[in-house]
Image 1 (cartoon, helix red, strand yellow):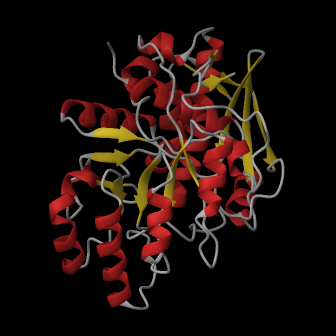
Image 2 (cartoon, rainbow, N blue to C red; image 1 turned 180 degrees about the vertical axis):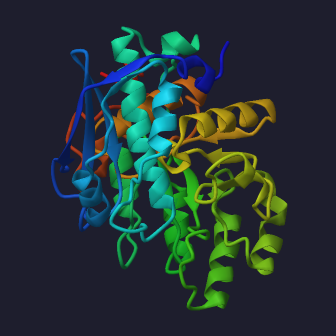
Image 3 (cartoon, rainbow, N blue to C red; image 1 turned 30 degrees about the vertical axis):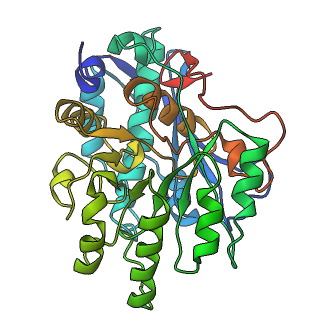
Length: 350
């Protein structure tokens, strides 16, 4: 069975034109700007799609690009080598280096979609892997002040859907007890790898102590592992530590203070198909479990992440709930978990 890169790198691809369009959520999300931008690559009567996440400035930069993409490329690898020669940030470097990965993935995913569609095949077919139904969780904010009823009410309305929650020092023991009583809470995210200011280290450590004592069967994502006191607290539960923000490729697995048992592999954060393939293979070979997450995708990007989950880690706490779950009020009839992978031609879900 070929790995991801070897399965797709020799597909030919023809690009005749490209275009971009903004995407907006279907309703209020509670996020100030929840838009994304969809990239369309056209060729031989087919269309390949990719999705750019990030700030409005990042998306405007993509829409302003005028790149020489047109051509008949003997292989997808040849087109991506051509992409290496182009300046994807002509107006100046991005605010965050990681944005380079997001933009690169927009082009790589669209080119893969187009190559597969021109070959009249699907990603599962070229990989020789059967997609399986995808377990997904939903990220829900508790507000300020925190209100655990937000999680409980959403679970009551969607009883198959689990949760990935960002813990805060303001979570009292009573709040944590309420949340722990809700079925399906699977990941507690400390957001400790985002270089956020810590105003009160004592309050931070007390939060860890409460969380470790209260949530006895969840994954603990992105701890503040630059703080020895936090590492000491997590020692007894180190087999439940996960990493998300640092994971951009195989090398990054060696750069965490605690050895992870499971990692969040976000395709748009890795950025390149070849490195994503290496990361999948390394984790499978070394017994490291995987799940993935979204970055606010509203269009094809969310389905592409769901399809990869169906192929590589369907039973994990994948934070790729359908876009309906991004809304403040989830509409009736929202999909249940696990999600039918429903692969379409190309690199898409129907």
